[in-house]
Length: 137
Image (cartoon, rainbow, N blue to C red; front, side, top):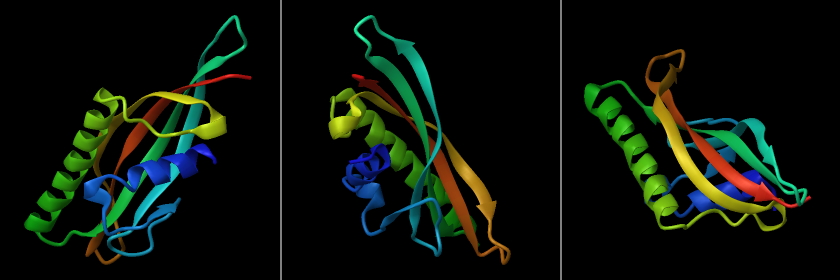
């Protein structure tokens, strides 16, 4: 399984993401979630040939955002996602990367409004997932 596939499966367990399908790269309508890679960095190469890597993925959600109450709910959703990820990381409950390597940590960075659609009725909110993992080569 690919890393993005493993992350999609893992995030499906997040209660704040229930009821929405996690797509790759783009949200089409309100209620959609999307995940896409934004970069990968090699942190270190070990003597045994294994590598410590960090991947960044953007998780976005498209939501109705016309009223203050909707915008407040949307920000609260991001806080719930961030909290769930922090709890899972603290408990060592990390994505199963299978042949891609062994997950060491998963964090959340940022989070907030990204953009509005052309009508101003829907907005995209998101944050960055930071996955550190070890890969044996």
